[in-house]
Length: 264
Image 1 (cartoon, rainbow, N blue to C red):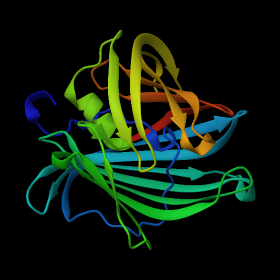
Image 2: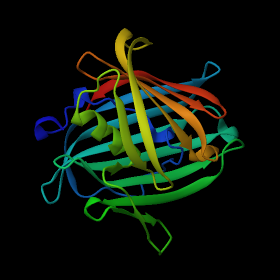
Image 3: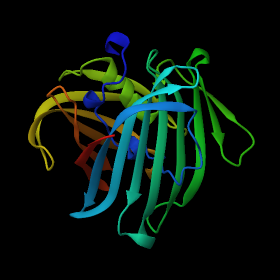
């Protein structure tokens, strides 16, 4: 991260990573974060449509926080909720990630899964991933399951949310770059390569803007690890506002559009 300072909220491109790696859905806040003192934040709101009909709403909030030991952290919270589909498709998703700002290392990733419907597998559980970079491992705990799991991970491995914190806080992203990241979401370790390209994109909230597109191929756990493509656009005006995200899934495409921004 440049200068080792705190998170600049206006420059953080928030992405709806929640659906990117296909394992996450989050319920009613049964798991609490460590004791922290919050220092401001920003919230971004998105809508996803299919066949012109809104089917998902999503939000992401992030801010600078301080642990009980005085460690400066970046906390990222994300949520996805289904709209209007009732018995056919119900999703209530939340995620919380903590990133050590000084070391750019993930500390903890919490996901609560609560989903069901005719077209998706029924799941309901809470899982906590504790990252231990010094030992190159992550400890996985599932609520109601006594036994913990430990998984070996390579250096610089992130959860889906801290991945983007690391990616965008470290350096400016230039068109033509290839950015390699290791990501572990509690199910599978993935190696992602994001290709970047500058282009104009139309935002319903901001109008036509200059943007950089990040694009990567990855597998989706929700679809039997079949491959798809992630595309993310953020502005190049210095604010790095996320304007859109598109998923080419094995069952079709879905696009998330930015519809609102709030300073907390």
